Image 1: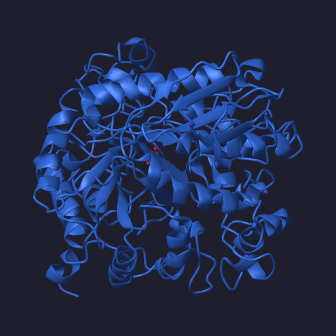
Image 2: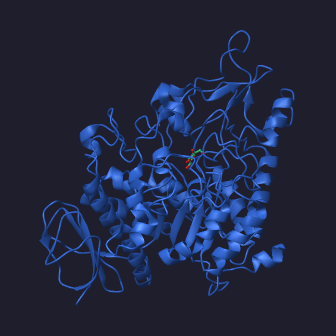
Image 3: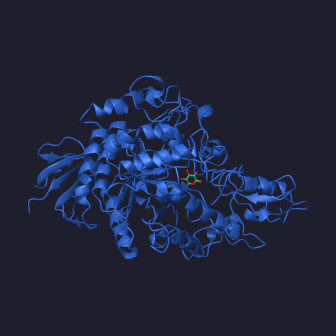
Length: 565
Ligand code: BGC
């Protein structure tokens, strides 16, 4: 298929002027190796995904965000990219990709792909070239190589740890060291190098030319670094101010020059391509820089994901973010789950983070037995209520595959079946480790049917083991049940379009500190009872509820009402 033909495949009904399609979109994240396996090799692929486009249509989403599908040695679930402009042969081909774009666009669903610009895979041809080239060569300049310390350079240039545990510098055969913020198989690019910058522009155009509608930018706050000859120690780095764009390793002001260039590329297209930054920064003000229309345009707000199921936490996150979005001209991004976090149905079944000392959001607690301390029923109920609250908000909603089934985290994956470097490497450090278990538990392949090998994920077994209880969460089981979480998501997403006439809300008094209530300009009210005791239901015509209600609003329940005034 020619590029011209591909460009012509814009979603039906989408005019070339609807450059704001993303502002209130529902974006569904597909982690491709765990979504649907079309060829029975146990790994999800593009053919499998394409065969499930009718499911996505029926669900009622506006866009798919596809996590990395590029050739990769899978040291970090595909976030170690060996070739930015190809498809992993285990996942498919470029032609399969083109077919997927066409199939989604034919249904009016946009496609956002993941771009991983801070680091490549150590299998990337440029890293291999760097290894084969001498110190100081142009090939080494594309990455961050340094001589070591100590008499023979046998000590790393600095004592920095990697995010997944262990040292952040690794020594190569000729004695130099390279920096890797993440696993040692993920060397950091040198963003001071014009060739690196240019190559990413080529990558963005490559996918945009194939009809991709936008990009999710991985760890967007890293990339550009300021590394003096004498590197600071880790303790010194930790003590440095990260709020003013001058920290040596993160969120530097010059980073915005990179994204301004990317913006020029996005604007070359009609409709302009969009982007959303995964930017872990210190303040909402810093996040706003990534969300500006001169930069990436939107930035994830993970604050709801880190919040306990609690009325005042939810309200303050929403207020702060709406205000910030209004100031930058962007729109809010609401997220409860993704491929890096413990599924929210499970998180909400745990005691509050503050009472347990666990890290909020990275919520899995496993004291010897899988799922110890988790109230699954309560978690499910709260998850449904939180989702309906989130879907009632102005802004875009990012959903993670399987949350529409109400899936829980899988806690009991045997250690030898686990794949996540955050598990495999954090044994030493216990840092960024989701309490020691890593992120595999939210990446287990989806159950499509209640029986059969891998519950309909594929024709063979799945690359991560699925628990027996997945049967009751399968698409097949849930679509037959009007009370299922899947049925709730389908109804909510269908109705949500009626809320998207404007991007504002008005808070209403409830008289209960556990209850939040807001009205949208179309007259609908969203009321959530975060507490345990039932409260009186505001008057209004019933639209939808997260669980059955009668004359009162029970605890852990959200209702959508059409106001009578
Ligand atoms: C991605 C992770 C990944 C890391 C390194 C993140 O923020 O979401 O899954 O491990 O970046 O690429």
